[in-house]
Image (cartoon, rainbow over all chains, first blue to last red; front, top):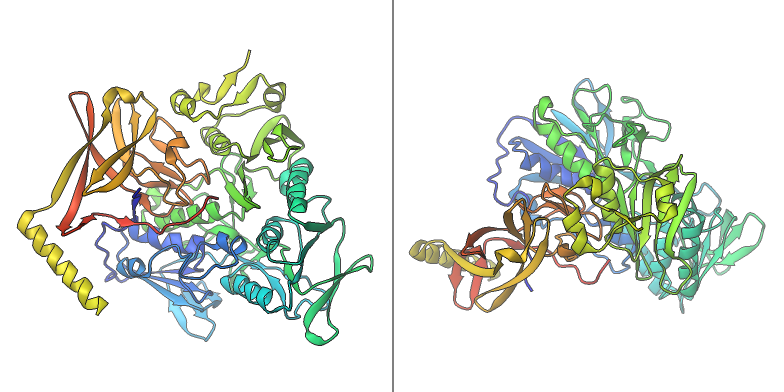
Length: 451
Length: 153
């Protein structure tokens, strides 16, 4: 059946004849959405997006899930729409310096661009382990399309089925393992944790993911780290071996490093205050603290938590998009009409056909309460992350729409206690017929008293 | 050649529009008492043999109609969460829409939902589908079809 949708600015007659110039550095989720949002808010000056990537904005999350990704099959916007809303993309270009006093950005080739307002949305730079051999051929990071396509080409080139070693058991590492496990001869994940995804999801959920991976012939070398990459005996340029700290080694044709990202803020380090993690601190309107006309969104932004206001940085796709949307809006409208960014963080991943959803923010938690089945062949569960007796986040598998429902609860300021969850007296309700009905009185929405 | 053809189509369409005016068709999609406040329901209607589905929702006595699939990865929105403000959150990745307007409230959806005007008459729910033009064997509805994504996530 047909499912009509329409682009947000489809009905607008966009003009760019105004004198003002808004510049966005970064063509990822935050930058792309900001450009559209600037137009939606009625801005009639020029909008320029400087993007390191040589293609128009893509649905980046697919790069670690689908090896066959192509720029035109995963794009966020049709090129004719971007033309219609008059957003000028400078592709394959980077900013090398910010001159705040002159409202000017210097690009890689020395060209300068004047801006009236600037959005920094440069995202994260994937880390490479600073160990011998990390620049050998077929040692990949996974962030841009060229990384996925490089991995795909390498997978084909290797004689026979390639042996893959993945460094890191966080989301990129585990998604890469899932993406490659079908076509590889072997996939081994090397990580310092005791179970995959341990830091974010905890030990019990990590074990579920680990069993799922093992069922799909992924091996783990956990509580372990990598010392060096060695080349092949017959090809000194290509990786052949991964040497671990305990001196054991793994044969490898392809290595994928999923060891985190660093905010790509080098080009402003002399002109803007940079946080210890490399990020830019913004207020709830996403304006960089201490500046008059510079905004930041996405992986580079440390922003006030939606309820506690502590400064947090969240590398989620949804967060980057929504921050871009709000930053773009705030760049256009008068200060008094600015919108606060206060979304509840949400992320999702797809591992061997199983979807994991996560709603909330639990940077630190002291308790994980599991409800449901984590042992069976088809794990179906919700894991609640709590601190000081207060539930901060939930991760679910096979429980839709529980995570979304919980996210709505947090948004309206409701709190669940770990005691309520543990005792079973109160349950999250996820029968959709009832959800709609009960959503009307927030106090009674999702809480169903069992006895 | 394709450029010429599409120009030709546009010209033909504008001729048809000027000759016949914008066409709005009315479709019966349900009974008013099918929905209580806070409920959603999928309904089907047909335009020139093409079946369309629509998501009906009721909030504080008012009825609304939008596309029935999420514009992100096409989850069925009827399984999502609707609030009294008209926020409809997709059960898969938390994309959130306003059912009154079709607009985006929250990422990761980018295109908005198509919104249809609703008429209640004699306790029946009708929606209005606006047509941008009628061509032989083709009905061009006034919206773009979003990029499709195959498979579930």
